[in-house]
Length: 90
Length: 252
Image 1 (cartoon, chains in turn blue, orange):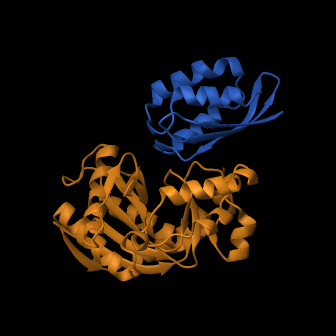
Image 2: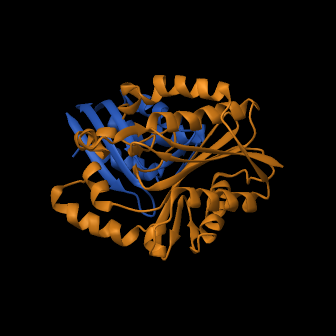
Image 3: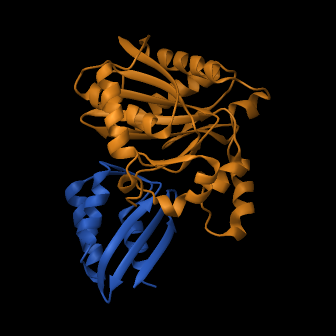
């Protein structure tokens, strides 16, 4: 299944997620938008770690990922990321 | 302190972005001074932010039709149609005493140079975090920064004139139904040097004003220089391997 979500982050930028999934599992994900993350490669790593993950594990994974990597982020939040990923499933 | 001023005039998108990256790499190895570069785009081009989806943001067919290049930047932020504008880049080590170390602070400092530059053209403007400069409540400049190898690269655009209709033919809109509404919205929110002054200002005059603004804001001597042979060589390599590479541009 393919899913896409577009989320205007309150006081932030536009977050667009393209996702493919098989039942509960994310099989492919692209996190896109006009936001900023430093270092930029953080988002590539996040995509890699989300691939193969069950939807119910996403929230915990994202919290831990940002806690560990501590990237500097402008225009999106962990909550908006979680919401946008879940919205892809509708 | 002495910084280098590069006036590289007009280049294609691949060369332009590759030059910025080549300067960043050379500065990080201390092979060149901190640098302010002012430049233009020929042919006009659309650049998208590092995180954006090329095919979702850009109408590639229309770009090809109009002879407009398209390219993914190494910096985040949004899609820009580079046509009648001056683009600058500022390459400085993160630990430079003239530059605040935090990201927001360094945006503010570099943009203050642009605000001073615009004032020399008779335009009042101000910085709006994170990455915009506005005049009369409308955006006149967008900026984007990356930090690699302990070095800041910030580049951005100062609009000399706008063609919002053309811009929207090159960028994708969520739906055709919304197109007119979005064009109207952007026309109300974006301005340019020519629109504010009610006359046409040429590229070189804008470059001169901006160079003066940076010089004053950072209180440095800006010495007009050239790209080194090594920078040019690296830029050529980066243009070929990254910016002309389909895989890079289509990676999202």
